[in-house]
Length: 192
Image (cartoon, rainbow, N blue to C red; front, side, top):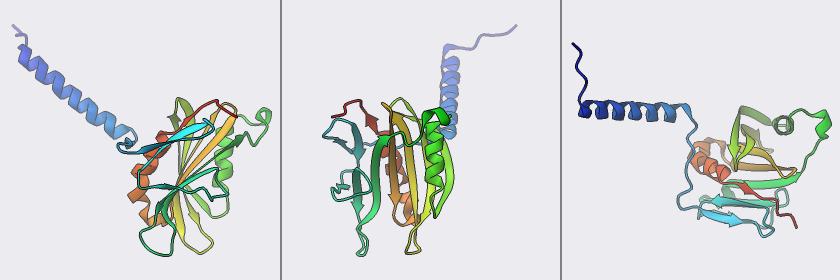
């Protein structure tokens, strides 16, 4: 005759299953750092917000990006050790001729001279489909930087956020912050 397990045995078994499931889920998903003490930057025009580590500074002089921030360099000779640049604009292609705007945009970014793509991952940011591109870029001085670029679309606008480790060898040092910043992006339909 079979005996029913006691209540304590069932609870232990359930707890063990829950712990195993948690380990399995963690192993099968990307780890995204939560911005604990990050500071949220709110765009004056109400178009976006993004979280930055508190030691990062906003640089109003950049011309390539509409929003630019960086981690000041510890060593002389370089202005920043890591940067974040954000641009937005209308779709750079005719939707009628392109099946997937984000894939088209990603292909153009990865085809740039000196760029080597490492991975392309589909993700969700601010409840929107996005592509996360991991690449290395050869710089004119021969150095190689490493980047994580997020591309998404919201309100008929393509958003590109690029986090760069100026010295590609230090990419892993900044990767957790990069992923947290990219995951924190929120876009809105407020356009003035």
